[in-house]
Image (cartoon, rainbow, N blue to C red; front, top):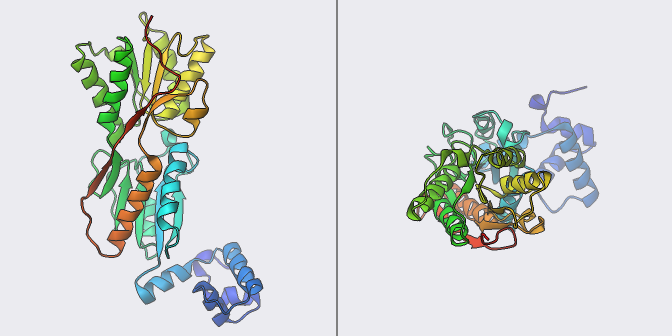
Amino acid sequence: MKHNKSSLTIRDVAEACGVSISTVSRVLNNKDDVSAETYEKVQRVIAEMGYTSSLAATSMRSRRTNVIGVLVVDLGDPFSLELFKGIGKAIYGTEYDLIIYSSGRIAATAQSGWERWHLSRLDGGITDGILVVTPTTAELTTNSPLVAIDPHEHNVFPAVLSANREGAIAAMEYLISLGHRRIGFITGRQGLVSSNRRQQGYVEALEQAGLPVDPALIQPGDYTRETGFRCAQNLFALPDPPTAIFAANDQSALGVIDAANAAGLHIPDHLSVVGFDNIPQATGSVPALTTVDQSLSEMGYIATTMLIKLMQGKSLDAPVCKIPTRLVIRDSCRAVK
């Protein structure tokens, strides 16, 4: 008999495995008196049948599931992968597990507010707390503890973010010290604190140096490599193109390098490029990318420890944690001749 996933019971799992209900229960509760062969068989059948009601049942009995939900727009993005290193480190050796929901799209094409639907699912007794990475909206409602990583501009939840403005100023001051006066800027995704603060740092650094802020040099990006490529092409086409480009993240900066290569421009001889994030790909690019490191793994780690504190009923030292940034100088910049 075929069952809907929502109607599956522990009895259905037991019948499919050919074991008793109590054996399935012992597997679900990680008891050590079940043989390895039986344990693996039950877990395999649970995965195949999509049986998830054990989490809700556990929650009803103990008010806890020991599960942390994570909502992330693009699971394969290097930014997200680095965050998950820290998240994994934070739960290593603890009793907590993860459930991850992704929009299944790159950030640029994700529907605004996609997190709300998944949040309502996780909020129904499946998780004890939720991490939301680069949310597309600030209008989130939950009964569970929630911590945002790289939050929306109007975020009201505890959050972890980097010193975005200060990092952007450091990048710009470096380029200005090399003699660059026309510096292009590719923004991040609209609505995020990180994008707005990095643009703020770009503008402030120019003003502090007594340089004009030319709107033509500011291109609207979305943190993707493809858009970084197109923005760079627009900057190259200006009557007076920039001698340097500061991109709001490394993916956009790598898009700039792609566009420069396609246009026959040599970096850094013809163009200097600076990114923001310090993802692993920044060291492997040709040339190696100068960037602003914001300790992504540490951001994931701190956000998770904050969430666990809230899940345990403890108070936070501060609702927002700001991670320091540092400029990492590599090979993608040079002084103006």
